[in-house]
Image (cartoon, rainbow, N blue to C red; front, side):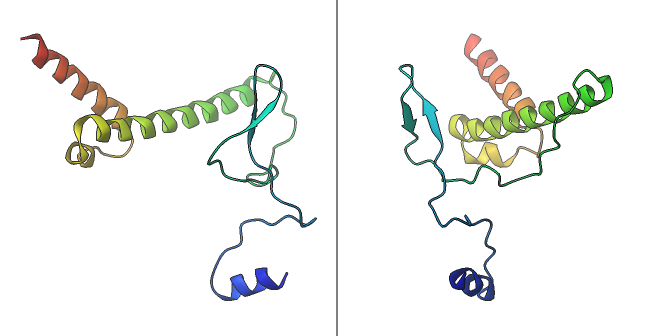
Length: 122
């Protein structure tokens, strides 16, 4: 408690703490034999930290389903755009990466790859 108050007074934002005083959980994956493997370099987390869960939603309701699918599609597209942006930097360099406008990385990557393939044909 004293450390948290000290950090807040110093201008830091304390995102979460565990009330029981134990260590935070580390992400694990299940191996084929069923044993749990800790991910090297993974971040510790608190499972209940984050956005509030909306509870059980009736996915038979078309409006709820449409909204949830839209949210998931947006999440996937953001992650794909993020990966495309960094792939441009790895393949074509930092200067080309700086030319990419936000939200257009996948489209820009397609154009760069098509141009490179066209140039290599001749």
